[in-house]
Length: 240
Length: 243
Image (cartoon, rainbow over all chains, first blue to last red; front, side, top):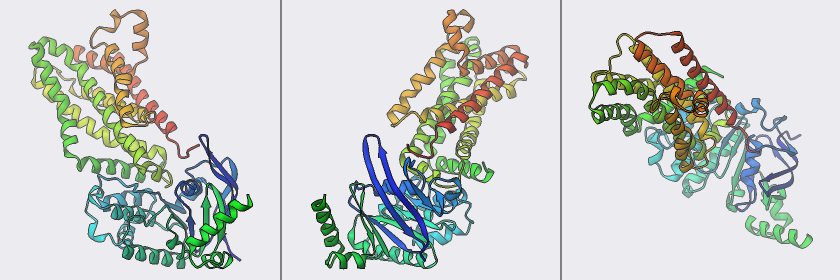
């Protein structure tokens, strides 16, 4: 039996006058990589922020590890790397990671571990301001790896990375999943979806489908996930 | 609230300042430079001795208000605040960390300003310590109000505008330009609810009398309570969730 780390039921979110999420029902299974795919503006970030408790949920519900999203006790079990680089530009890499390590009650030696996991050890003493965009986003990822989170929520972690580094990070994600960590990774690049065990396809705040990449391609009789996505969008608009 | 997270935050803010030496130099030197300027504008030790105590409270207050509101606003806009809100850190850990780091800077700033004032002819007698205490409390008041003001600013332009809005009326009404007792009744009432008035009162009292009185203690307590209230309100405006 699969254990669900995240379970959303009829989740709708309105921000201001915009309906961002429209009645989502979805699950994230334990110990696998779930990809959250969709064009920008489809509601990926809002869904992630709701899961980590930054976005209030009024309509529907989200259970994370059996508790309502936003519950204080979840803060040590769930780690979130927001889109972009939410690190302090005027601190060095190791100062950034060290500060967050104390905030999440991680051990001091954890700082070295996460820096080597994202291959930033040689840059430890560089100011975050002076790093490239890709390096900064790896600092951000390193912070999310601190401690021992059971759920990692990563918003577009591979943006701006070269293919070699991207490959390394996806291998790291796979290793983490093997160790039993659950990952929810968003991307707007379809070729990254191939590396996920399960996919959530989001468009205009609606969930187009939740299934594995293989089953999605088989069902839509397509060879690429890009084509599968297009096929889903067109059948969706025919039926509505 | 945990001490680890509070001091980790204070340390982090201090490290950020260390990477920005120009700001540190300005924070420490500007009040002293302004006091020296004032001394020579009037060119009279007597007038300087009259004005300096009040200004020892006012300059650190203004500077700390500015620095704190901009720094916290940057934390809000850069996404680091949002990220912190997903960790177990308590909101008060964060605010207390800021208050400790900037409080230490403020104390250094005030100490240098007092020493410069003394060398320029301000006679503080045996009250140096008490003068420092109020000035430091006043600087902390700037920190607390700056933290609070940043909650209402979306952009750095707005944050700067809070200075004329929050700081200038307090300067006009604190008794620096006109003794509070000689103001129109309505203005006196306004002055009575502004915390800087109490700090300036205490500074003038202790410089004039050369000793600590009950009124001084009361003023100091009022300023202290405003610092705590400012921090508590700032914590209340800090939201973990967007609606």
